[in-house]
Image 1 (cartoon, helix red, strand yellow):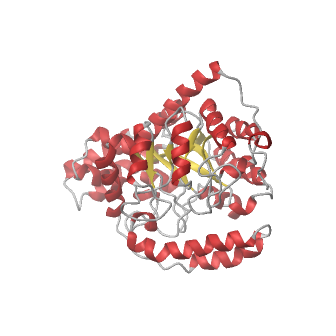
Image 2 (cartoon, rainbow, N blue to C red; image 1 turned 90 degrees about the horizontal axis):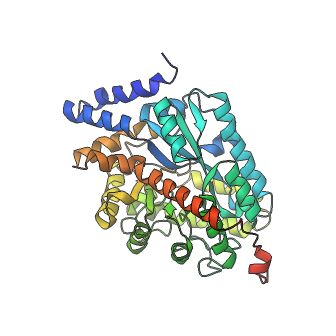
Image 3 (cartoon, rainbow, N blue to C red; image 1 turned 45 degrees about the vertical axis):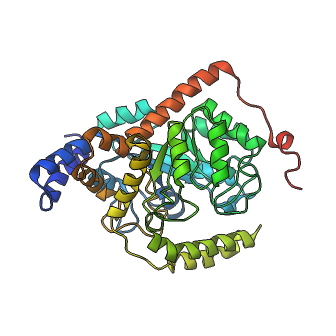
Length: 414
């Protein structure tokens, strides 16, 4: 028997596990749907553990949210490993930090080739799903990682990066963040050039973390559908990191998809009321640390660990799925857990091994099998495929951009 067989066995066992709470017919249906689906999670921060803690995906961990054994149990077939470059790296080797994180993903694929392999396309995801291996995608979190260079952006694409979150908690030299002072009213001229070059490359434009005005500018500029890789619904949990209904509609109208964050503060207003003020204090401390943010790291970590936990049931995630579906239909919502990147997750979704519960619950609520498969990953793969098609056309029509931020934003540092 091939080594990856436990991935399929775990899915069959899932049906036995839930039989105590649901009829055997639904159990079998849910297990079959889970096997058919390519389950995509567009944002896992486990990459930081790989680089900073020497973590290895092969061993089942007692901490954190994700490793290969739990991915097999949960049927997670295509995680996007976040190439997360914190704001503290601005001016201190942000691109190097991104390269080191990318290398850790390659390293895990080299160590465990029968379990996981690098993926850069829809075709790769489909092939690896047939083989029973995990498709390891990558997405950059924090546009400052390109250090204002379109050439660096292209290098990251060549290395396999397939989306970029335009900002993180910080407004950068070309895009406004949702959690920092607005500087550009959205995107400036160079920011629009970044979006156009991402379209030409086939790299998905990710608007999680950016300001509402920035999302509007991206929608106006992009020739391809866009994604929000790990954001939920502001109508349910009113924090700046979540999306308002009008922007969910606008993203859907362009063919894009909202990938819902599992963090409790993203899902529940009660949890947000407790956690968000602490997060705002953390972001303010990062900002005040200026050019020497390392001195604040110990205090930031203490503050993160002291954020009170508000228990939120897994049903809260389903409420957000329902909300997006009622607004724009089942073609525009997916999963972007933020595993290993959020302080707390809902009860019942403690780690990626629990993902089959979502399948069962959606079927139980009356979602069709086809719609469940779309939500589990089909919608995201559709968007990636459309980005690939737009890129093929644009690469015939125009050469790589040679624009520089110095020419497009001459008063940048004034």
